[in-house]
Amino acid sequence: MKKTKSIWGNPPKRLYRLIDLAENNIGKDFTACIVGCSDGKFLLPFARKGIKVTGYEVDDTALYGGNKDFPIIKDNEIFSYSEDFVSKEYEVENKHVCGIIERIEKEQLTKYVNIEKRDFYKNVPKEKFDVVFTSCSLHYSLNIQFTSKEKMEKLQSIVSDGGYLYVDYMMAIDEKNTDRYPFNKYFRKGEMRKYFDDSWKIISLIEKNEPTFERAHVERTRDHFHRFGYVLAQKIK
Ligand SMILES: C[S@@+](CC[C@H](N)C(=O)[O-])C[C@H]1O[C@@H](n2cnc3c(N)ncnc32)[C@H](O)[C@@H]1O
Image 1 (cartoon, protein in one colour):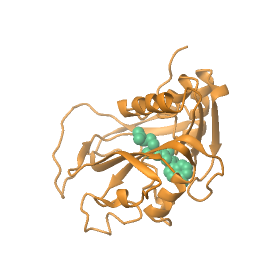
Image 2 (tube, helix red, strand yellow; image 1 turned 120 degrees about the vertical axis):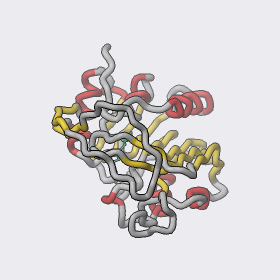
Image 3 (cartoon, protein in one colour; image 1 turned 90 degrees about the horizontal axis):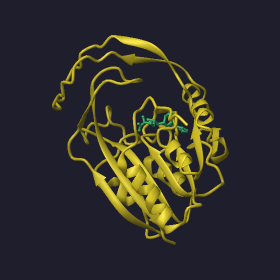
C-alpha cells in the first residue's frame, strides 16, 4: 500500500518513541486519541501499526479535503530572531489537498480509525484513551474563551489511568507582551508544570528559551518564529 502524505510533513521521532512507550507499558492493544488531528500527520502512524485511534477535528478541509495556498519557496535562507523581523512575500500556488478521511481510505486503515468532527474544548467526550496527543491545538483562536488551565484539564480528563498525555504547545516569545501573546493562547515558562498535580508523573518537559525560525508554509505563507514547549506525562493515580 502506497503511503499518503500530510501537508504538514512527517511526524518527529518523539511520536514513534511515544508509541513504543505505550506498547511496552500498556500492551499492543492500547487506544489513542489525537485532539486536532488535522489531515492525519500524527494519527496515521498509530493506525498503520494497527492501533485503534480516534481523531477530533473541526476544520472541514482537514477532514474532507479542499484547496489551500502553498508558498513557492526557492531558497533555504534561515533567519535569526529579531523583534522587528519582516518576512519576504512569497508567491503562492493554490493546490488540492486530501483530507484525513480520504487518506485513511486510500491506505485502507478505516477499521482502526474513528474520526469525529468535534470542537473538543467546547464539547469534551466521555470516552477515555491510553494515549492522548495534541500538537499545537491549544493556541487556536477558536479556543480563546478557555484558559490554558481549563484546556489542560479537558485533555487530562480523557486519559485513562496509567495512560499518557503528550502536548506540543506554543510559548510567548515576549512573555511580558500580553497583547501579542495573550495568556489564554501562549504559555509562559514554568506554567505548564503547574497544571499537573500529584496524580501525574511528568516524564519529560522541554521549554525552549529561544524562538525557532519557521519557513513560510501552508496556512502561514510568511516566514515566522515560534517558541515551543513539549510535555509528556503519565496518569499514575
Ligand atoms: C496546527 S494543527 C496540527 C498539525 C500541525 N500543523 C503540526 O504539524 O503540528 C492543529 C489542529 O488542531 C485543530 N483544532 C484546534 N482547536 C480545536 C478544537 N477545539 N477542536 C478540534 N480541533 C481543533 C485545528 O483545526 C488544526 O487542524
